[in-house]
Length: 479
Ligand code: NBP
Image (cartoon, rainbow, N blue to C red; front, side, top):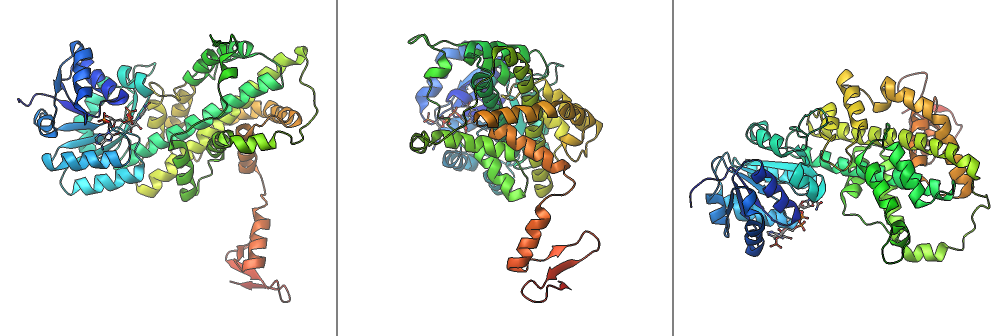
Protein backbone atom coordinates (compact mmCIF):
# COMPACT_ATOMS: atom_id res chain seq x y z
CA UNK A 1 0.00 0.00 0.00
CA UNK A 2 1.36 3.47 -0.82
CA UNK A 3 1.82 6.07 1.94
CA UNK A 4 -0.70 8.61 0.80
CA UNK A 5 -3.08 9.71 3.53
CA UNK A 6 -2.42 12.98 5.37
CA UNK A 7 -4.50 11.89 8.31
CA UNK A 8 -6.11 8.71 9.60
CA UNK A 9 -9.18 8.12 11.72
CA UNK A 10 -9.69 4.94 13.71
CA UNK A 11 -13.04 4.43 15.40
CA UNK A 12 -15.81 5.00 12.88
CA UNK A 13 -18.97 5.25 14.98
CA UNK A 14 -20.98 8.48 14.54
CA UNK A 15 -18.21 10.87 15.62
CA UNK A 16 -15.24 9.26 13.87
CA UNK A 17 -17.16 8.66 10.67
CA UNK A 18 -18.30 12.26 10.45
CA UNK A 19 -14.89 13.63 11.37
CA UNK A 20 -13.27 11.49 8.65
CA UNK A 21 -15.84 12.78 6.15
CA UNK A 22 -15.16 16.36 7.26
CA UNK A 23 -11.41 15.92 6.58
CA UNK A 24 -12.14 14.31 3.21
CA UNK A 25 -14.64 17.01 2.20
CA UNK A 26 -11.94 19.56 2.94
CA UNK A 27 -9.60 17.94 0.44
CA UNK A 28 -7.49 15.71 2.68
CA UNK A 29 -6.82 12.09 1.91
CA UNK A 30 -8.06 10.17 4.94
CA UNK A 31 -7.10 6.66 6.00
CA UNK A 32 -10.02 5.02 7.80
CA UNK A 33 -10.05 2.07 10.17
CA UNK A 34 -12.36 0.50 12.72
CA UNK A 35 -12.05 -2.54 14.99
CA UNK A 36 -15.07 -4.04 13.29
CA UNK A 37 -14.15 -3.79 9.62
CA UNK A 38 -17.73 -3.62 8.35
CA UNK A 39 -17.97 -0.01 9.62
CA UNK A 40 -14.97 0.90 7.46
CA UNK A 41 -16.51 -0.74 4.40
CA UNK A 42 -19.87 0.95 5.07
CA UNK A 43 -18.24 4.37 5.30
CA UNK A 44 -16.47 4.03 1.98
CA UNK A 45 -19.54 2.53 0.32
CA UNK A 46 -21.88 5.28 1.51
CA UNK A 47 -19.62 8.32 1.44
CA UNK A 48 -16.64 7.34 -0.72
CA UNK A 49 -17.78 9.85 -3.34
CA UNK A 50 -17.27 12.74 -0.91
CA UNK A 51 -13.47 12.63 -1.07
CA UNK A 52 -10.35 10.45 -0.91
CA UNK A 53 -10.58 7.66 1.63
CA UNK A 54 -8.01 4.91 2.10
CA UNK A 55 -9.78 2.03 3.87
CA UNK A 56 -7.63 -0.24 6.01
CA UNK A 57 -8.72 -3.47 7.65
CA UNK A 58 -5.65 -4.04 9.81
CA UNK A 59 -3.74 -1.74 12.13
CA UNK A 60 -0.60 -2.38 10.08
CA UNK A 61 -2.23 -1.36 6.81
CA UNK A 62 -3.74 1.69 8.48
CA UNK A 63 -0.38 2.92 9.78
CA UNK A 64 1.28 2.13 6.47
CA UNK A 65 -1.28 4.30 4.67
CA UNK A 66 -0.23 7.45 6.54
CA UNK A 67 2.37 9.93 5.34
CA UNK A 68 5.07 10.84 7.89
CA UNK A 69 5.02 12.23 10.45
CA UNK A 70 1.82 10.24 10.91
CA UNK A 71 -1.33 11.87 12.19
CA UNK A 72 -3.63 9.28 13.67
CA UNK A 73 -6.96 10.29 15.16
CA UNK A 74 -8.62 7.98 17.69
CA UNK A 75 -12.41 8.35 18.00
CA UNK A 76 -13.37 5.41 20.22
CA UNK A 77 -15.26 5.11 23.46
CA UNK A 78 -13.32 6.96 26.16
CA UNK A 79 -11.56 4.96 28.88
CA UNK A 80 -10.20 1.42 28.46
CA UNK A 81 -10.95 1.32 24.69
CA UNK A 82 -8.66 4.34 24.17
CA UNK A 83 -5.83 2.58 26.04
CA UNK A 84 -6.44 -0.60 24.02
CA UNK A 85 -6.18 1.32 20.75
CA UNK A 86 -3.01 3.13 21.87
CA UNK A 87 -1.47 -0.21 22.85
CA UNK A 88 -2.29 -1.59 19.45
CA UNK A 89 -0.94 1.32 17.41
CA UNK A 90 1.94 2.80 19.40
CA UNK A 91 4.37 -0.06 18.63
CA UNK A 92 3.77 0.54 14.91
CA UNK A 93 4.62 4.26 15.09
CA UNK A 94 7.91 6.15 14.88
CA UNK A 95 9.38 9.18 16.65
CA UNK A 96 7.62 12.38 15.61
CA UNK A 97 4.31 10.67 14.85
CA UNK A 98 1.12 12.03 16.45
CA UNK A 99 -1.80 10.29 18.11
CA UNK A 100 -4.79 12.58 18.43
CA UNK A 101 -7.41 11.42 20.92
CA UNK A 102 -10.68 13.15 20.01
CA UNK A 103 -12.77 11.22 22.54
CA UNK A 104 -14.13 12.63 25.79
CA UNK A 105 -11.16 11.49 27.88
CA UNK A 106 -10.57 12.55 31.46
CA UNK A 107 -7.69 15.03 31.36
CA UNK A 108 -5.77 13.03 33.99
CA UNK A 109 -5.78 10.03 31.62
CA UNK A 110 -4.60 12.33 28.85
CA UNK A 111 -1.72 13.56 31.02
CA UNK A 112 -0.70 9.95 31.74
CA UNK A 113 -0.92 8.88 28.09
CA UNK A 114 0.99 11.95 26.94
CA UNK A 115 3.77 11.23 29.44
CA UNK A 116 4.01 7.56 28.47
CA UNK A 117 4.08 8.23 24.73
CA UNK A 118 6.56 11.09 25.08
CA UNK A 119 9.09 8.41 26.13
CA UNK A 120 8.78 7.00 22.61
CA UNK A 121 8.90 10.51 21.11
CA UNK A 122 5.31 10.16 20.01
CA UNK A 123 3.16 13.27 20.39
CA UNK A 124 -0.08 12.53 22.17
CA UNK A 125 -2.63 15.24 21.44
CA UNK A 126 -5.65 15.03 23.76
CA UNK A 127 -8.29 16.97 21.86
CA UNK A 128 -11.70 18.13 23.02
CA UNK A 129 -14.23 18.10 20.21
CA UNK A 130 -17.63 19.70 20.75
CA UNK A 131 -20.69 19.89 18.58
CA UNK A 132 -21.95 16.33 18.50
CA UNK A 133 -22.25 14.42 15.26
CA UNK A 134 -23.41 17.44 13.24
CA UNK A 135 -20.44 19.45 14.47
CA UNK A 136 -18.02 16.65 13.61
CA UNK A 137 -19.32 16.68 10.05
CA UNK A 138 -19.85 20.38 9.37
CA UNK A 139 -17.30 21.96 11.71
CA UNK A 140 -16.82 21.40 15.44
CA UNK A 141 -15.19 23.55 18.05
CA UNK A 142 -11.83 21.88 18.61
CA UNK A 143 -9.71 22.08 21.77
CA UNK A 144 -6.33 20.39 21.19
CA UNK A 145 -3.74 20.00 23.92
CA UNK A 146 -0.31 18.39 23.48
CA UNK A 147 3.00 19.79 22.34
CA UNK A 148 3.37 23.04 20.37
CA UNK A 149 5.23 21.05 17.66
CA UNK A 150 2.22 18.81 17.16
CA UNK A 151 0.03 21.89 16.75
CA UNK A 152 2.41 23.26 14.10
CA UNK A 153 1.69 20.16 12.07
CA UNK A 154 -1.96 19.64 12.92
CA UNK A 155 -3.18 23.19 13.42
CA UNK A 156 -3.73 24.11 9.77
CA UNK A 157 -5.76 20.93 9.18
CA UNK A 158 -7.85 21.46 12.29
CA UNK A 159 -8.43 25.08 11.37
CA UNK A 160 -9.74 23.95 8.01
CA UNK A 161 -12.26 21.43 9.37
CA UNK A 162 -13.33 23.47 12.41
CA UNK A 163 -16.40 25.66 12.74
CA UNK A 164 -15.91 29.33 11.91
CA UNK A 165 -17.19 32.10 14.16
CA UNK A 166 -19.34 34.88 12.69
CA UNK A 167 -16.17 36.93 12.01
CA UNK A 168 -14.66 33.99 10.12
CA UNK A 169 -12.15 32.97 12.81
CA UNK A 170 -11.63 29.20 13.08
CA UNK A 171 -12.94 27.69 16.31
CA UNK A 172 -9.69 25.99 17.27
CA UNK A 173 -6.56 27.00 19.14
CA UNK A 174 -3.64 25.25 20.80
CA UNK A 175 -5.11 25.23 24.29
CA UNK A 176 -1.92 24.23 26.09
CA UNK A 177 0.33 21.23 26.86
CA UNK A 178 -0.68 17.65 27.72
CA UNK A 179 -4.21 17.49 29.20
CA UNK A 180 -5.15 21.17 28.72
CA UNK A 181 -7.47 20.48 25.76
CA UNK A 182 -9.46 17.78 27.51
CA UNK A 183 -9.62 19.88 30.68
CA UNK A 184 -11.13 22.80 28.78
CA UNK A 185 -13.57 20.46 26.99
CA UNK A 186 -14.60 19.11 30.40
CA UNK A 187 -15.34 22.61 31.73
CA UNK A 188 -17.13 23.44 28.47
CA UNK A 189 -19.46 20.53 29.19
CA UNK A 190 -19.90 21.66 32.79
CA UNK A 191 -20.93 25.11 31.59
CA UNK A 192 -23.26 23.41 29.12
CA UNK A 193 -24.95 21.60 32.04
CA UNK A 194 -25.38 24.92 33.87
CA UNK A 195 -26.73 26.70 30.77
CA UNK A 196 -29.28 23.93 30.23
CA UNK A 197 -30.35 23.92 33.88
CA UNK A 198 -30.84 27.71 33.90
CA UNK A 199 -32.89 27.53 30.71
CA UNK A 200 -34.94 24.74 32.31
CA UNK A 201 -35.61 26.87 35.37
CA UNK A 202 -36.67 29.82 33.21
CA UNK A 203 -39.08 27.51 31.37
CA UNK A 204 -40.53 26.13 34.61
CA UNK A 205 -41.06 29.63 36.01
CA UNK A 206 -42.77 30.84 32.85
CA UNK A 207 -45.01 27.83 32.99
CA UNK A 208 -45.81 27.50 36.71
CA UNK A 209 -45.62 31.10 37.90
CA UNK A 210 -46.66 33.03 34.77
CA UNK A 211 -49.02 30.35 33.46
CA UNK A 212 -47.75 30.28 29.86
CA UNK A 213 -48.15 27.20 27.63
CA UNK A 214 -45.10 25.49 26.07
CA UNK A 215 -45.96 27.02 22.70
CA UNK A 216 -46.13 30.51 24.23
CA UNK A 217 -42.86 29.91 26.05
CA UNK A 218 -41.28 28.83 22.76
CA UNK A 219 -42.24 32.24 21.36
CA UNK A 220 -40.74 33.99 24.38
CA UNK A 221 -37.48 32.08 23.87
CA UNK A 222 -37.51 33.02 20.19
CA UNK A 223 -37.76 36.67 21.17
CA UNK A 224 -34.94 36.28 23.70
CA UNK A 225 -32.87 34.66 20.99
CA UNK A 226 -32.84 37.94 19.06
CA UNK A 227 -31.18 39.72 22.00
CA UNK A 228 -28.24 39.20 24.33
CA UNK A 229 -29.25 35.58 25.06
CA UNK A 230 -28.80 34.70 21.36
CA UNK A 231 -27.41 31.15 21.47
CA UNK A 232 -27.75 27.67 20.07
CA UNK A 233 -29.25 26.32 23.30
CA UNK A 234 -31.98 29.01 23.43
CA UNK A 235 -32.71 28.39 19.75
CA UNK A 236 -33.15 24.62 20.18
CA UNK A 237 -35.16 25.16 23.38
CA UNK A 238 -37.76 27.03 21.33
CA UNK A 239 -37.80 24.17 18.82
CA UNK A 240 -38.28 21.52 21.51
CA UNK A 241 -40.99 23.53 23.30
CA UNK A 242 -43.00 24.16 20.15
CA UNK A 243 -42.84 20.52 19.05
CA UNK A 244 -46.12 18.62 19.36
CA UNK A 245 -46.17 14.86 19.95
CA UNK A 246 -47.71 13.20 16.91
CA UNK A 247 -49.12 10.25 18.88
CA UNK A 248 -51.04 12.25 21.50
CA UNK A 249 -51.29 15.80 20.16
CA UNK A 250 -49.79 17.02 23.44
CA UNK A 251 -46.76 19.28 23.76
CA UNK A 252 -43.72 17.01 23.25
CA UNK A 253 -42.19 18.24 26.51
CA UNK A 254 -45.20 16.83 28.39
CA UNK A 255 -44.80 13.29 27.08
CA UNK A 256 -41.07 12.96 27.83
CA UNK A 257 -40.13 11.42 31.20
CA UNK A 258 -38.64 14.11 33.43
CA UNK A 259 -35.48 12.21 34.35
CA UNK A 260 -32.34 13.76 32.89
CA UNK A 261 -29.37 11.57 32.06
CA UNK A 262 -25.68 12.37 32.02
CA UNK A 263 -22.51 10.86 30.67
CA UNK A 264 -20.07 12.19 33.25
CA UNK A 265 -18.20 15.28 32.04
CA UNK A 266 -20.41 17.59 34.15
CA UNK A 267 -19.70 15.46 37.19
CA UNK A 268 -15.95 15.54 36.44
CA UNK A 269 -16.10 19.34 36.22
CA UNK A 270 -17.48 19.49 39.75
CA UNK A 271 -15.15 16.81 41.13
CA UNK A 272 -12.09 18.58 39.76
CA UNK A 273 -13.39 21.95 40.96
CA UNK A 274 -13.63 20.48 44.46
CA UNK A 275 -10.02 19.29 44.19
CA UNK A 276 -8.88 22.71 42.97
CA UNK A 277 -10.98 24.55 45.57
CA UNK A 278 -12.96 26.47 42.95
CA UNK A 279 -16.61 27.27 43.77
CA UNK A 280 -18.58 26.14 40.73
CA UNK A 281 -21.89 26.09 42.57
CA UNK A 282 -24.01 26.71 39.46
CA UNK A 283 -22.49 23.78 37.59
CA UNK A 284 -22.77 21.61 40.72
CA UNK A 285 -26.46 22.47 41.10
CA UNK A 286 -27.01 21.53 37.46
CA UNK A 287 -25.37 18.14 37.97
CA UNK A 288 -27.33 17.57 41.20
CA UNK A 289 -30.59 18.64 39.54
CA UNK A 290 -30.10 15.93 36.92
CA UNK A 291 -29.35 13.31 39.58
CA UNK A 292 -32.35 14.41 41.70
CA UNK A 293 -34.61 14.09 38.67
CA UNK A 294 -33.51 10.49 38.28
CA UNK A 295 -34.43 9.44 41.83
CA UNK A 296 -37.89 8.38 40.82
CA UNK A 297 -38.73 6.41 43.98
CA UNK A 298 -37.60 9.22 46.24
CA UNK A 299 -39.69 11.68 44.24
CA UNK A 300 -42.75 9.41 44.37
CA UNK A 301 -42.34 9.07 48.12
CA UNK A 302 -42.12 12.85 48.51
CA UNK A 303 -45.12 13.87 46.41
CA UNK A 304 -47.31 14.38 49.48
CA UNK A 305 -44.98 16.89 51.16
CA UNK A 306 -46.59 20.26 51.83
CA UNK A 307 -46.02 23.15 49.44
CA UNK A 308 -47.10 26.79 49.41
CA UNK A 309 -50.61 27.85 48.46
CA UNK A 310 -49.76 30.93 46.42
CA UNK A 311 -51.80 31.44 43.26
CA UNK A 312 -50.09 31.85 39.86
CA UNK A 313 -49.82 35.35 38.43
CA UNK A 314 -52.71 36.90 36.59
CA UNK A 315 -52.51 37.39 32.84
CA UNK A 316 -51.77 41.08 33.20
CA UNK A 317 -48.62 40.42 35.26
CA UNK A 318 -47.25 37.57 33.15
CA UNK A 319 -45.47 39.61 30.48
CA UNK A 320 -43.62 41.75 33.03
CA UNK A 321 -42.64 38.59 34.88
CA UNK A 322 -41.25 37.07 31.67
CA UNK A 323 -39.02 40.14 31.26
CA UNK A 324 -37.77 39.62 34.80
CA UNK A 325 -37.00 35.99 34.10
CA UNK A 326 -34.89 37.09 31.13
CA UNK A 327 -32.87 39.31 33.45
CA UNK A 328 -32.48 36.50 36.00
CA UNK A 329 -31.42 34.05 33.31
CA UNK A 330 -28.86 36.43 31.86
CA UNK A 331 -27.39 37.35 35.25
CA UNK A 332 -27.19 33.68 36.28
CA UNK A 333 -25.53 32.83 32.98
CA UNK A 334 -22.84 35.45 33.61
CA UNK A 335 -22.20 33.77 36.97
CA UNK A 336 -21.97 30.25 35.43
CA UNK A 337 -19.37 31.42 32.95
CA UNK A 338 -17.54 33.31 35.69
CA UNK A 339 -17.31 30.06 37.65
CA UNK A 340 -16.33 27.95 34.63
CA UNK A 341 -13.58 30.35 33.57
CA UNK A 342 -12.34 30.45 37.15
CA UNK A 343 -11.94 26.67 37.02
CA UNK A 344 -10.02 26.86 33.74
CA UNK A 345 -7.75 29.55 35.20
CA UNK A 346 -7.18 27.42 38.31
CA UNK A 347 -6.41 24.31 36.22
CA UNK A 348 -4.05 26.34 34.09
CA UNK A 349 -2.20 27.56 37.20
CA UNK A 350 -2.09 24.11 38.77
CA UNK A 351 -0.66 22.39 35.69
CA UNK A 352 1.32 25.29 34.17
CA UNK A 353 -0.75 25.33 30.99
CA UNK A 354 -0.73 29.07 30.42
CA UNK A 355 -4.22 28.98 28.91
CA UNK A 356 -5.40 32.14 27.15
CA UNK A 357 -8.95 32.56 28.49
CA UNK A 358 -9.96 35.03 25.77
CA UNK A 359 -8.96 32.45 23.13
CA UNK A 360 -11.10 29.83 24.82
CA UNK A 361 -14.14 32.13 24.71
CA UNK A 362 -13.29 32.81 21.08
CA UNK A 363 -13.19 29.14 19.97
CA UNK A 364 -16.51 28.41 21.68
CA UNK A 365 -18.27 30.98 19.50
CA UNK A 366 -19.00 28.44 16.77
CA UNK A 367 -19.51 24.70 16.38
CA UNK A 368 -20.10 23.78 20.00
CA UNK A 369 -23.23 23.35 22.06
CA UNK A 370 -22.71 26.49 24.14
CA UNK A 371 -22.05 28.74 21.14
CA UNK A 372 -23.55 32.13 21.79
CA UNK A 373 -23.21 35.80 20.98
CA UNK A 374 -22.37 36.25 24.65
CA UNK A 375 -18.96 34.57 24.15
CA UNK A 376 -17.84 37.53 22.06
CA UNK A 377 -18.35 39.68 25.13
CA UNK A 378 -16.26 37.32 27.27
CA UNK A 379 -13.50 37.37 24.68
CA UNK A 380 -13.57 41.18 24.69
CA UNK A 381 -13.39 41.22 28.48
CA UNK A 382 -10.26 39.03 28.53
CA UNK A 383 -8.74 40.79 25.53
CA UNK A 384 -9.09 44.09 27.40
CA UNK A 385 -7.51 42.60 30.50
CA UNK A 386 -5.93 39.13 30.34
CA UNK A 387 -5.45 38.94 34.13
CA UNK A 388 -9.07 39.78 34.93
CA UNK A 389 -9.61 38.27 38.43
CA UNK A 390 -13.12 37.22 37.44
CA UNK A 391 -15.62 37.96 34.70
CA UNK A 392 -17.61 39.87 37.30
CA UNK A 393 -14.67 42.29 37.56
CA UNK A 394 -15.28 43.34 33.98
CA UNK A 395 -17.08 46.70 33.98
CA UNK A 396 -19.63 45.77 31.34
CA UNK A 397 -20.65 42.52 33.01
CA UNK A 398 -20.74 44.22 36.43
CA UNK A 399 -23.03 46.92 35.05
CA UNK A 400 -25.31 44.39 33.39
CA UNK A 401 -25.66 42.41 36.60
CA UNK A 402 -26.27 45.63 38.52
CA UNK A 403 -29.10 46.42 36.13
CA UNK A 404 -30.51 42.87 36.37
CA UNK A 405 -30.22 42.25 40.08
CA UNK A 406 -33.55 43.65 41.28
CA UNK A 407 -35.46 41.51 38.80
CA UNK A 408 -33.21 38.52 39.59
CA UNK A 409 -34.14 38.82 43.26
CA UNK A 410 -37.84 39.30 42.47
CA UNK A 411 -37.84 36.16 40.33
CA UNK A 412 -36.33 34.14 43.17
CA UNK A 413 -38.89 35.56 45.60
CA UNK A 414 -41.69 34.52 43.25
CA UNK A 415 -40.12 31.08 42.76
CA UNK A 416 -39.83 30.56 46.50
CA UNK A 417 -43.36 31.78 47.13
CA UNK A 418 -44.76 29.39 44.52
CA UNK A 419 -42.46 26.51 45.46
CA UNK A 420 -40.79 26.26 42.05
CA UNK A 421 -37.27 24.81 42.44
CA UNK A 422 -34.64 27.15 41.01
CA UNK A 423 -31.31 25.83 42.34
CA UNK A 424 -29.30 27.33 39.46
CA UNK A 425 -30.70 30.86 39.74
CA UNK A 426 -30.42 30.74 43.54
CA UNK A 427 -26.85 29.41 43.58
CA UNK A 428 -25.81 32.07 41.09
CA UNK A 429 -27.30 34.87 43.17
CA UNK A 430 -25.79 33.47 46.38
CA UNK A 431 -22.38 33.38 44.69
CA UNK A 432 -22.79 36.97 43.54
CA UNK A 433 -23.89 38.16 46.97
CA UNK A 434 -21.11 36.22 48.70
CA UNK A 435 -18.43 37.67 46.44
CA UNK A 436 -19.56 41.25 46.99
CA UNK A 437 -20.17 40.86 50.75
CA UNK A 438 -18.19 43.06 53.09
CA UNK A 439 -18.11 40.32 55.74
CA UNK A 440 -18.90 36.62 55.44
CA UNK A 441 -19.86 34.22 58.24
CA UNK A 442 -16.57 32.47 57.52
CA UNK A 443 -15.26 34.44 60.52
CA UNK A 444 -17.73 32.56 62.70
CA UNK A 445 -16.74 29.28 61.03
CA UNK A 446 -13.12 29.96 61.97
CA UNK A 447 -14.19 30.68 65.56
CA UNK A 448 -16.07 27.38 65.72
CA UNK A 449 -13.13 25.48 64.25
CA UNK A 450 -10.82 27.05 66.78
CA UNK A 451 -13.24 26.17 69.58
CA UNK A 452 -13.65 22.49 68.82
CA UNK A 453 -10.37 21.69 67.13
CA UNK A 454 -7.84 24.42 68.01
CA UNK A 455 -7.53 25.03 64.27
CA UNK A 456 -6.46 28.67 64.92
CA UNK A 457 -7.57 31.83 63.13
CA UNK A 458 -6.08 35.00 61.69
CA UNK A 459 -7.14 38.43 62.94
CA UNK A 460 -8.29 41.43 60.95
CA UNK A 461 -6.00 43.82 62.81
CA UNK A 462 -2.60 42.07 62.95
CA UNK A 463 -0.49 39.37 61.31
CA UNK A 464 -0.10 35.86 62.65
CA UNK A 465 -2.15 32.83 63.71
CA UNK A 466 -4.02 32.82 67.00
CA UNK A 467 -5.87 30.46 69.28
CA UNK A 468 -8.28 31.27 72.09
CA UNK A 469 -8.08 29.09 75.19
CA UNK A 470 -11.79 28.22 75.00
CA UNK A 471 -11.68 25.59 77.76
CA UNK A 472 -9.63 27.83 80.05
CA UNK A 473 -9.67 31.54 80.78
CA UNK A 474 -10.45 32.42 77.11
CA UNK A 475 -7.34 34.46 76.73
CA UNK A 476 -5.71 34.51 73.30
CA UNK A 477 -2.36 32.94 72.53
CA UNK A 478 -0.18 33.15 69.44
CA UNK A 479 -0.31 29.83 67.60
P1 NBP B 1 -18.73 5.47 20.91
O1 NBP B 1 -18.30 6.22 22.10
O2 NBP B 1 -20.06 4.82 20.90
O3 NBP B 1 -17.62 4.34 20.61
C1 NBP B 1 -17.78 3.42 19.56
C2 NBP B 1 -16.47 3.22 18.85
O4 NBP B 1 -15.47 2.73 19.76
C3 NBP B 1 -16.60 2.16 17.76
O5 NBP B 1 -15.79 2.55 16.67
C4 NBP B 1 -16.05 0.93 18.45
O6 NBP B 1 -15.57 -0.04 17.56
C5 NBP B 1 -14.91 1.54 19.21
N1 NBP B 1 -14.34 0.66 20.24
C6 NBP B 1 -14.85 0.27 21.43
BR1 NBP B 1 -16.52 0.67 22.04
N2 NBP B 1 -14.02 -0.51 22.13
C7 NBP B 1 -12.93 -0.63 21.36
C8 NBP B 1 -11.71 -1.31 21.54
N3 NBP B 1 -11.45 -2.00 22.66
N4 NBP B 1 -10.80 -1.27 20.55
C9 NBP B 1 -11.06 -0.56 19.43
N5 NBP B 1 -12.19 0.13 19.21
C10 NBP B 1 -13.12 0.09 20.16
O7 NBP B 1 -18.60 6.37 19.59
P2 NBP B 1 -19.00 7.91 19.34
O8 NBP B 1 -20.32 8.25 19.92
O9 NBP B 1 -18.74 8.12 17.90
O10 NBP B 1 -17.91 8.73 20.18
C11 NBP B 1 -16.52 8.60 19.96
C12 NBP B 1 -15.79 9.44 21.00
O11 NBP B 1 -16.15 10.80 20.81
C13 NBP B 1 -16.17 9.09 22.44
O12 NBP B 1 -15.02 9.20 23.26
C14 NBP B 1 -17.17 10.15 22.80
O13 NBP B 1 -17.19 10.41 24.20
C15 NBP B 1 -16.64 11.34 22.03
N6 NBP B 1 -17.62 12.36 21.72
C16 NBP B 1 -18.88 12.03 21.33
C17 NBP B 1 -19.81 13.02 21.03
C18 NBP B 1 -21.18 12.66 20.58
O14 NBP B 1 -22.00 13.60 20.39
N7 NBP B 1 -21.48 11.39 20.35
C19 NBP B 1 -19.43 14.37 21.11
C20 NBP B 1 -18.13 14.68 21.47
C21 NBP B 1 -17.24 13.67 21.77
P3 NBP B 1 -16.56 -1.20 17.02
O15 NBP B 1 -17.30 -0.59 15.89
O16 NBP B 1 -15.62 -2.28 16.61
O17 NBP B 1 -17.44 -1.60 18.18
